[in-house]
Image (cartoon, rainbow, N blue to C red; front, side):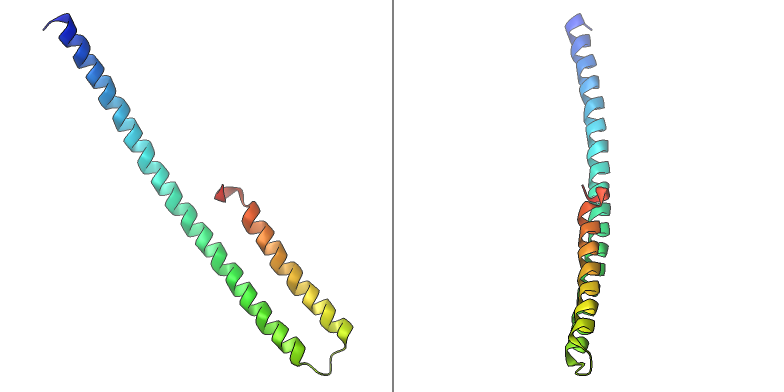
Length: 97
């Protein structure tokens, strides 16, 4: 085998090694992306349930003729704060970045 052929063989082996490493990293990245999608979907589902619950509670509050306006206002603010905090927590979650 000539020196040139040896060099080409060595270069091909290095290329094959780098390609295998790239494929490994690519597969790992795909797995991490899939994990993040699952986490994100779970959190979005939780937020959706909170919004639906808040909507139902708001309907209950507006139907409560006996409640005073201040009481209704306070209960609504607690609901709005809870949902707002859930949004902030979801979008500030470092796992999603």
